Length: 328
Ligand code: ACO
Image (cartoon, rainbow, N blue to C red; front, top):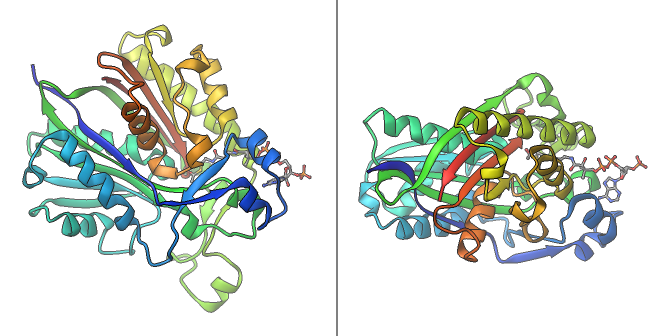
């Protein structure tokens, strides 16, 4: 029987590695603080400012298409979740479609910050159910280091760059997307925000002098609390809706923002830490790409096995959050 699901998945990160000891030389921080408070040891970052988000996406997208065993000509939509697009417009999806040499397709970017991959799966599933689309390239990618203030120790130690890509289609051998839920609430959006460059604070010298072109996080501890609360809530919701309990889950694949957030969600869901996919030590918080990088890495390492039940969950700026159930 044909099922809607993932046909192939892959990730890509830039080659350059920035360690906690490197950061010790840049801001007033220590390896010990970063490791203890976040779980991060290193992150991959772009080595050349000319590298664009679409450049980092390309290898991930090519590998995902190859693994899905479809012809790239059969992709009829490219959806990209990113808060760091190549340009305001045309979309990064337009850049990726052009660079991949895919025929004409629906090309669209959307913003859901760290929940980008889950929102993308939700949109792709809806498009396939409409009957008008067959194979959709869902990409979640961010180069947060491009919008990081390297003088701000509160944020610069947290982020890394990366891209994750999956082809979603309907086939007998698809990793079945059993269900996906997306949600959000803008009322606390100011806690995690990039103030400059948009229509509220257009690009001016004054705006740049105030450093508004960089992301800012107010009250990290508040973001921390909401992340645990909403990821737990939406994970319980999707399990209940589909008649599963957390005992049925083989792998929890959470957004990799902070090891303590992941531990908090796992504890509240009664999922042992051995069943939690953890890649934050090597990549940091890669925003939208964090969930597909984590999933793809464990899949490539042979840890995720056929038939296993995966619970994905993410939380990010907006605030946005989501969950998905996948039968691998
Ligand atoms: N090195 C050393 N000390 C630091 C650093 C640093 N890099 N950063 C902050 N500190 C200090 C603070 O100044 C503070 O000092 P003070 O007590 O003298 O004022 C102290 O450490 C503790 O600060 P807290 O904010 O209480 O630390 P906390 O334990 O909350 O950890 C952190 C901070 C890691 C940011 C955590 O709150 C967190 O992970 N928050 C969630 C971030 C997140 O999930 N973002 C998700 C969305 S990201 C997206 O959508 C793009």
